[in-house]
Length: 116
Figure (cartoon, rainbow, N blue to C red):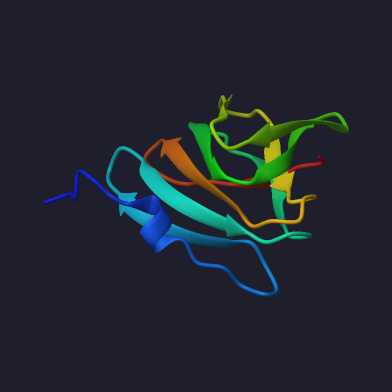
């Protein structure tokens, strides 16, 4: 049985070297994960050929890559939706740790590297 209520902040992990992802739920229909991103760390720009990736920022702020060299700032409370094949990724350019939840809506988590 799938756990229906998960405290994402209780599961977030951080690393001194890389942004860290922790899977919270994986089913035949999608996945939910929480990311811990320390200042200076990056979630590399990428896209998913098969599904939508929705990010919900819980803490901190990130410089969010939208492709074609463009970025925008996202912060706690922001929901960003990257449809399939839309470039996304982020860098923590701030001074505090950032945490976001990624909700991916496809059976397999295929990732293709992209240019920010």
